[in-house]
Length: 384
Image 1 (cartoon, one colour):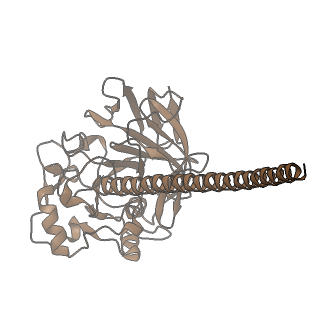
Image 2 (cartoon, rainbow, N blue to C red):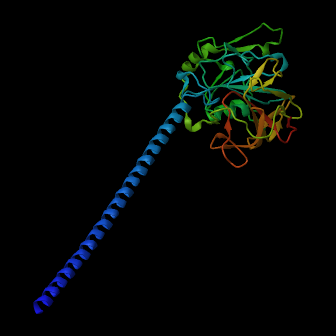
Image 3 (cartoon, rainbow, N blue to C red):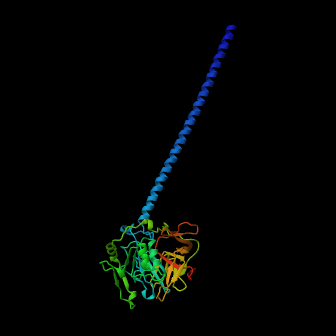
C-alpha cells in the first residue's frame, strides 16, 4: 500500500515536473515568438524606412534633374520672349534701338519682319504729343536687314534699356539745358554702352539713309543690322550679359489665360496729347493685332504700365519734353484674349512685374508690346 502511494506520489511529482516543464517551455516558446515578431516588425519598419528613404532620394534626384533641365531650358531660351533662340546668343547682352513713330516714319523698317521682328517694343511719349519706340532684341546677330527710321535718345528710354543691360543704339540725343536733364547726361552718368550715329567712330558702314519715300531727311535714317556685331566689337563693349543687372521675366510652359476677364480689344492712350493704340485679339492665331503702325504687327503680350509724368521745357525750346518718373504703379497684362491687373516697380535697378498678391507675373512665351502711359496726364485704357 505504501509502495502504491509512493508510486502515485512519484508519478504526481513526475507529472507536476512535466507540467512545470511544459509551462516553462510554453513560456519560452511564447517569449521567442514575441521576440521573433518584434524582430520581424523591426525588420519591416527598417525595410519601410529604407523604401521611403529610397523614394525620397529618387524624388530628390528627379527634382534636381527637373530643376537642372528647367535651368538648362531657361538658359537656352530668349530671356525677352521665352522662345528658343540662337545658341550663340545665349547669355549675351541685348540691344535697344531707338525708332521713330511719327506718321512719315511709318511703316517702320523691320518692325513686322517675318523672322526677326523686335522681341519687345516699348512705346512712350517724347515731346509735342508724339510717341517714340524702342526696340529690344535679345540676339543682336539676328535683326531685320535694316531697322529704322532711327531717332534720338531720350532719358526715360535710356533708363528703361538699363533694366535689360542693353547696348543702346540711337541717332542723336537730347542735351541738358535749364532744369531739363538730357539723354546725353544720363548716358554719361550711368555709363551706358551706346552707339550714337552723330558720334559714330566705327569703320563699318553701320548707318545710312533710305530715300525710297518722299519724306524729310530726318525720317530716313537706318541701321544696317548685319554690321552691328562688328561695330560693337570695334567699340570694345562687353557682350556677355550681367545677370545681376538683367530683368528676367517668368514665362509659362504653355499658353495660358491671364485671368477669367475677357480682353478681345484693348485700347491704350498714352496721354491726353498723344496717340492711341488699338489692339484686337484674333482667336485664329491667338495673337493681338494692330494696324496703327501702318503694318500688320502682332504681339503675344500687351503690357501697359501707368507712370507719373512731367513736362519740362528747355530754355529756347518751343515744346515740352515728357519725362517719366519711374514711380511704378498699376498696369495691365493682356494675353490669350484675357487680361489681369498688375503692379510694377523698379527694384535694385530691375523691372518688377507682380500680380495684386505680390507674386511675380508669368508671361506667355512670345513677343511683347509695352505701352508706357501717363497716369496724371490723361493716359487711358479701354478693354472690351
